[in-house]
Image 1 (cartoon, rainbow, N blue to C red):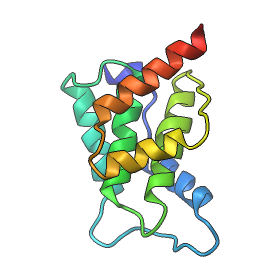
Image 2 (tube, rainbow, N blue to C red):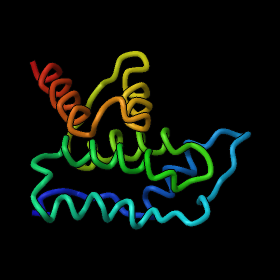
Image 3 (cartoon, rainbow, N blue to C red):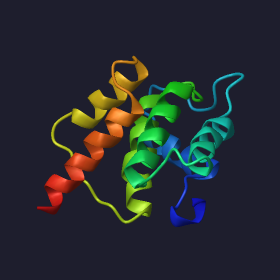
Image 4 (cartoon, helix red, strand yellow):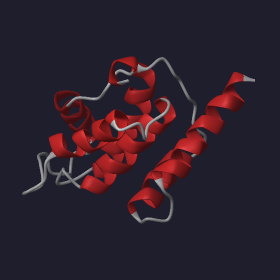
Length: 132
């Protein structure tokens, strides 16, 4: 099942993180955090059949990268850019987001006000609206 999706890799997420950093923010990894372990959590969900489509995949990436706090700064922006913009695009999906809805979703995920399952449903619904 893994081969049916293009997956994010550590080097790619690191490059995205470098691009989303603002001038006053610190680059680099947080101490005792592993981006590889965060990405493996997503890949394990895929292996065990908990991810059924690209929206489940990118929702897990978004939630786990944001909540993993692997970077000193810009974890939420990295999660949004890596998961949604890159993860969807690599897998052939393009979405347009209005206002700050995506950012609010990532914040809500980090604060446990929403789940990755709800995030996946929202992404899927947004895609279906864009298709019509």
